[in-house]
Image (cartoon, rainbow, N blue to C red; front, side, top):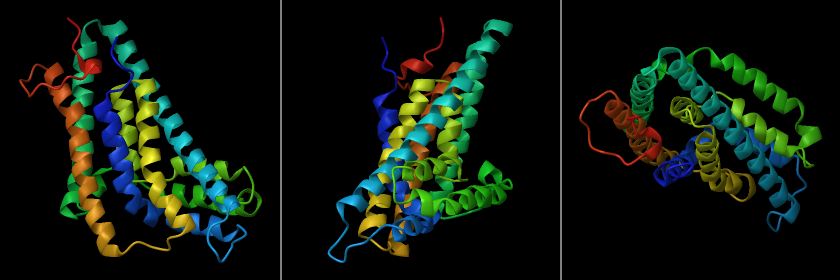
Length: 257
């Protein structure tokens, strides 16, 4: 029986999350700072209460990533199953086409990071009018900070972050949708969320900022991780379409005999 998720995928998603922490500082850092300012502070360092609150916040954020990843994986699985039932052997063809498309999108995102260019961002969903969505979600979070930041409901503030337009999350969500594996989608997005925890946790407790030069370097390495991640569905998709490519042992992508 094949594993629920390939270890290579989990490792790459965790790496993307770890390296993407620098990006998270720019997107989520101001909100994290706002939450932290509501908590009772101690000049001697973060208190156990603060540590607990930040842990709950990051747990809620990671859980929501996993939930969305699992739901998108379920949507993909439903589409593949429906296509296979309606059109017979078209299932592998559809998975191949989607795999190639997902791989190209994720690799394109990676290249924008590696090259330090924003030229391809206009082709990605994050640019399609999401600023209004961000404003609404951020406004919802901001209006509840006083009530939630000092209690267990700070986990809900963390959960909201899965619905903020994010160039880090969007490629991962597209990947989960294209894979069509609910459990793998949930586990992979959970791995990404866990990978982002160290940076945001430290930012909210003991660090105030990360130098811009270091963030830029991390973005380039993050781009390389995205390129590697995108190669998985791209090569597997090409294989399902009959294109001779280097073999990747990914049980979930094995063509049906």
